[in-house]
Length: 276
Image (cartoon, rainbow, N blue to C red; front, side, top):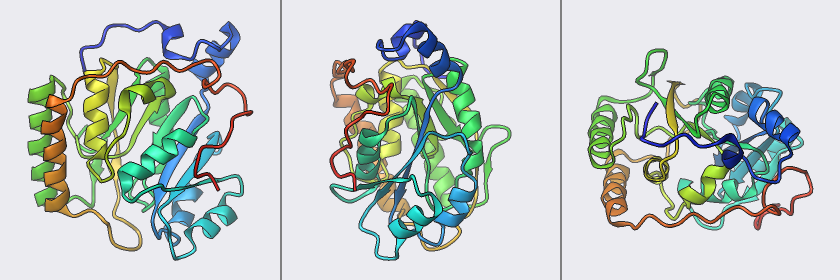
C-alpha cells in the first residue's frame, strides 16, 4: 500500500446521505461506473465491451468527435451506454467530462483500444472494498506485464516514477499507466485541469498529496487491437515531467465537500453538461 494516509472512518469515505444499510451495500457491492474515452475506436469497442463484467452499473463513453461511427457502434453493443461529448480535446479533458457524468460509487478509467482488460475491473473493485481509496494498476507487479511497452517508454516510465516517488514520498512502480479505479469521494481531490496524457500523472500525484489510501494492483497491458495510438513518447513525456514539477509549486487546495444532493445514491440525477 502506498502513501502515508491515516485511517479514514468508513462513514467519511462514503457520502453521508447513505443510511447504515446503504453504507453496507456500497462497501460490499458498490455501483461501478466505467469511463471510456474514445476517438475513432469503433473497431475496438466490440472487443472491449464483450469483456465488461455484467454487474457494472453504467458505462460512460466520452467521445472526442469521432468520425468512424464510434458512438453508433457503442449504442448497438451496449444500449444503455451514456454518451458524453468532450468540451475540449485530449484524454485529460475526456476523463474530466466522464467523471462529472458518473453516478456510481466507484469510478473506473478504461481505455477503448483493447490494451486494458475489462475483466480485471473486479480486482480493482476488490482492492477498494478492502480499504483502499484509490486502486492503481501496475504492469510491473507480479502478475502484471505488457506486450506493448517499448524499451524507451519503459525507461522513461522508470525515470518519471522514480522522480515522483522522491518528490512526493510515494512508492509507485508504474506511474504512466492509466488503468485506475477509485471511490467517488476522491473526485474533489483530483480536480483535473489538464487536457493531455499527463492526466494520469496528475491524478496519481494529487491523490497522494491528499493523503488518500493508495494500493497498486497487477494489470497486464495488451497491444492496441486496431488503429494507432495518439500517444507521442517524447512530446507526452515532457508534458508529464512539466506536470510533476508544476505540482510541486501548486498549493494543495481544500477539497470541496460533496453535498447530500450531489451524493449519488438514487437514479434521479440530472445529466451532466455535454451528455447526449
